[in-house]
Length: 575
Ligand SMILES: Cc1cc2nc3c(=O)[nH]c(=O)nc-3n(C[C@H](O)[C@H](O)[C@H](O)COP(=O)(O)OP(=O)(O)OC[C@H]3O[C@@H](n4cnc5c(N)ncnc54)[C@H](O)[C@@H]3O)c2cc1C
Image (cartoon, rainbow, N blue to C red; front, side, top):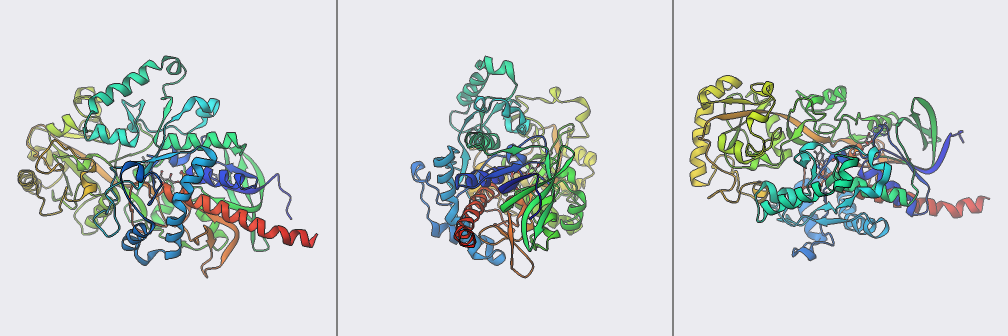
């Protein structure tokens, strides 16, 4: 066998949520594991995410008054995923996901709680639920990480209250939808942060870690406790194959080429290809730009290409975990519009000034609708979110907080009519953004009628639970529909971005990478966005990317451990 610079049972490539889970599980099952990470920060996109995982039939459901079953989860996934993904893989997910959550809590103290009010994205379909299946990481105290805290990828300011204060998913929902006690909650969060004076002297980052930061912190802390090594600035260059089996990876560690041996398996957990313009042009709907992604500029499709070089098959390469995004000058990433579109008093239009979708639709569907409309020649890239002064005052809009906290006067002067557009009439606004004037006037007039009746006969905005998750419960009769009447009027361009790509290496229910003929490439596993999504083209609910990334990390580790155990007697007999 080849000479290696380092050798482990399992080499995990990539330090996102899935990769760290796989390494932890492998080590706890008696194998030696290492995580190699190309960048100088660990955590990947997972660290900047909401940290949510979608876990049907999770143990926390009963505590919060819900109910679910394996069968209902299966009904739902069969209904919305269809035949695009083999049922055995879907079943592997549903069986192992709650088990993975239990195992991570018990073995490593990596804990999740459910988000009771977050509905499935198609909760009106058979097996769908109006809440409970999405879970979020419990709070983590960053001081436990010591110096490792500084090596973690930081969250985006947009996910923090006032750009600084950590906000869980449940808290964000209460604040943005002005749920009961939102003012008191805001004050409590502000006080807690500002009174933590000793910690604030050390860093501007909140000691309280939630969302993706909470998840990655808890995983990294568990790695430190269990002595699972992490090697930063160590990028996989290619896979090493011997006699039809993957036995290691060629890496570049701080400029030096090295060979890492993997006695039992390599787990590719190095994300998708959202930051690779050439791959975007080759696979995704056009037009497409790296600048439209909301993910950090790290994942270049390295794992997918390394697998392809060994003859691995790929699937779903034209699909993404889509979301409309907006551009904030100077920010590293685009900002996703998860919340804003559901708020009352806005309308999304194409260059004709016409609507093309339910504004409040789940973010992947809204992004897909942009491309579908653009393909019809209606000029929907960018699309425009148009709103009035009342909306601006009350609600956030991606690049800025509600006007009552961050008025126009506090925004950089050079953003006006470049980043956001403002005019005293709808007609003048249409002129500024190059949208058909008559079309926009008619659309706004129609939306104002819908706000009165509470019914959107065109796209049914506000008619299903997910539309209303982020909306304003004080607005009647439809919490997602409000008049667009008060000048000045605003418009912000939206781009068809994503939070990650979902096409990748074809894998079996054990996360083993497959060739075109369906045979397994021995020793090679792929999880997270390096693998083709178990959810196919759809997006069942919040946490549909990280739930599978962690679950298949757990499954891969178990499969590697079981095959190692099965091989022991053979090795002993041969000796
Ligand atoms: C704002 C935002 C919010 C989101 N919220 C959620 C949410 O709440 N729930 C959810 O399910 N999803 C969410 N997502 C999506 C989710 O974060 C990603 O789909 C997920 O993190 C992908 O996980 P991964 O392990 O495949 O990739 P990553 O987490 O990106 O990890 C891949 C790692 O591999 C490293 N790497 C790349 N190439 C190499 C190489 N050659 N060698 C070594 N290392 C390499 C990268 O640097 C990176 O650290 C969100 C995304 C964004 C942007």
